[in-house]
Image 1 (tube, rainbow, N blue to C red):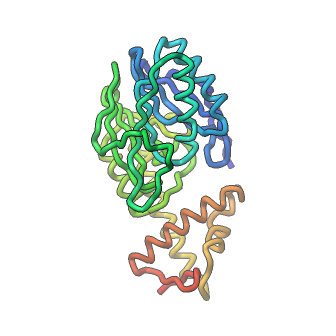
Image 2 (cartoon, one colour):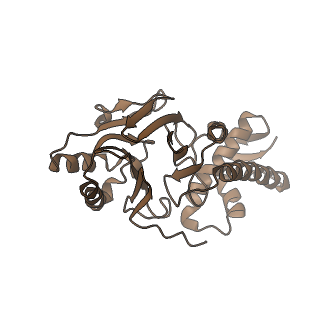
Length: 286
């Protein structure tokens, strides 16, 4: 597997954006969760808050940035419910308390009907598609982008036409998703936004968004074709891991469970389209 790009713990990316790593590197989080402090005044927006397991270390980093900037956090926007993006919210609020600042208003798009939100979210505010969260020097427009999760939202910094993509687009490697149909629609939705830069939830800044998004779309289309070819070449039905072992030979085995999720989502999409059949968790061409 190719080495990941080195990312400093703290990086000033523009006059309006400071990236702070969540101090939680790993196979799924890459260099760690990217969090972003956005704005130019004393009240800023923080996008995502890292993982609860490394929140103490992260809060120290964030506190050092806030002190240097002479700033506090007015709004904390969570891109989606995964714990490496929202787990550090309580630690951020405790940091603000220790600085004798007001607690941040926490925003997140709601999950789909039937998907439970944790009790800790009861004081959080619900984002709406197209809503603008603004502070001095920054207007962030919400773009609902389900697929990775049902509640996933990207944020467009209108002053720079830059998109904070959460886990919809990563700086390196490909993203995982819950629903491939919705994910493909979301990719096309953010392609239509026409962003100048993408600031992803993991990995380095994407300087050529259109090429990256089209590559994601092409990658998924290629994977779908590979799955169909594999099933066509089989003499009988197969299970998901048979496909993973064939298609992901050059991928770390630690990442195979995530690959299996993606393969299963492709299979579910093809099943809905009546292009394949499934019986007793075994898949084959109809």
